[in-house]
Image 1 (cartoon, rainbow, N blue to C red):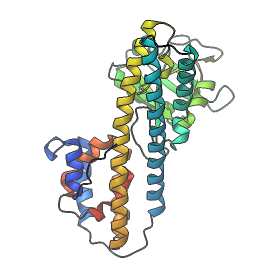
Image 2 (image 1 turned 135 degrees about the vertical axis):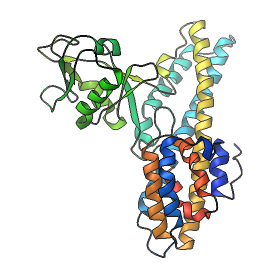
Image 3 (image 1 turned 30 degrees about the vertical axis):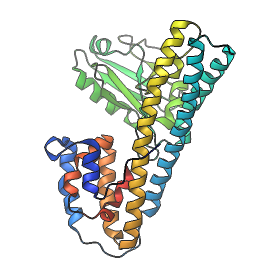
Image 4 (image 1 turned 60 degrees about the vertical axis):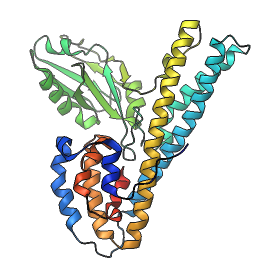
Length: 341
């Protein structure tokens, strides 16, 4: 697949890839612009590249993500061909499609492990190990959480007998207040809360902890929103995956047609993700080589910190693009920290 030509200027590369200008930059990006400009203004000094190991780890993780996406693209193309043949009535073994569906589902489930948790469930590239899984708890919808009087919900993320976390709720709380209470109560377990676009409570946990949470999570209340007494298992339902192969099947014509449509959509998503990762790797490798040649090590380390902070705030490529105007006039080698992706 033909890649886009390399950009000769970092600022134009960033702003050109997302079409975002200073006038439309995100608020949290705007907050970092002053520190980015301040770091950029410092003259480089010759010194060992103290964070080179971390930067190389980020490149390695991105390469792993690209390898995984290549594998997914190949599997999806095979699925598309097989499903299309079945719909067209061509002769063949129906078991082949079922085997390929099962194999793809198993491969997709290995995403976090095979990419070093650098590719999240939405096919977004994140810092190594930073991928998180969004989920909801069955029975804890916002309407139920707002009703009733004061209650303490006791969560056992690793099962009964392991450390418990408590969320204190009052009657008639606003959704934002409920989110704050969940964040406060579950922070020690590595679980964060937010308000979904549909107004429901959305939770997230590091992907490395996801399966353990699914297998062990138990909850008890005071008999108002959730039963009291003995803790009960509660089902954590994953949400937000770009690809959901569990819903694919070829048991009938209607199901086969839906599966083919979703496979085609998945191919498009994977191709887009591949191009983003390729472009990021290409740019990052070029910049780190020029940084090494320039002796701008100390500046690069400081500047890398600014961009790592930016990445941790979220927003992906659009957010990086929104600070591009702050980089105009800065030599490409001085933006080595874009390796943080």
